[in-house]
Length: 351
Image 1: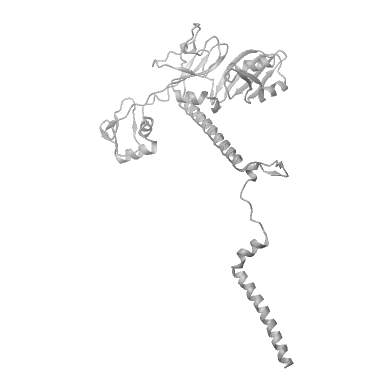
Image 2: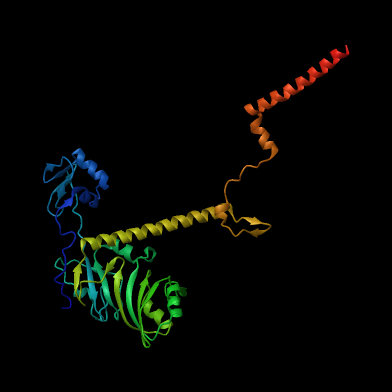
């Protein structure tokens, strides 16, 4: 039934009341986990009036009175993460002036928390839609620079040939309302699942989220979309749900989703740092030229400390004060002494 939770819905990962105390302290903003462990071992933390002597220690954040140096910490806010199988004909906006059916109305959560969608699916599309009240995770999952991929099962009209599939993979130019010009879409993964004379089924993986991107791309190629369903969001797959049903994410799903968003963020930061260093090196060294023409090799790799020249003067400098130089001098001196001895002996013979 649409709008009802599935009977197979697992418990929320935060429904388990027992949590390690260092995690609770860190989420409350006291300090890092290691620093919180040190506070516990020092005896600065008490639970329900009893000083904690050591680790491990498990607490119930919602009910236990946890204090650090006599001050009660703030209870960590609980977040909710829901997967919805959005049907066609529903919009993902929080408020619609046209009065159309909203996907948020399908989720009647017992907590009454205010949810919002992570990204959007247009009214004619269906599939996996994430709902949450965690703004930080939503930003990491939807920001284009983090490149969290999304997978779509797409059925289009007509037979899509290999040349057209390759054009989709390399990207096509689409108008960008923010920039005011046409820009090329990012490279995407495209796999042909089934190809008939009048219909083609594709699996498309995107790493950016432009408005109605897949529909606009297929219209450029002359293959209008007949059916579009999102079946994957990062590591999450659409499974265990019927159309219109929802459930809370399992602990494993939530953990993999957080790790995926964090890993993508680290990759983005790493790429930005590497590119910044390369630009700084190029600006400092400049291009390497030979006879007025730039070399084909990377100037950053070629730019380095010049090797010491092997001229005669440079060799004689360091070796002049060495023991090898003194030996050579003694040998030459010995040569001169033998010469004088020879002259003296010849003079004595004359005498």
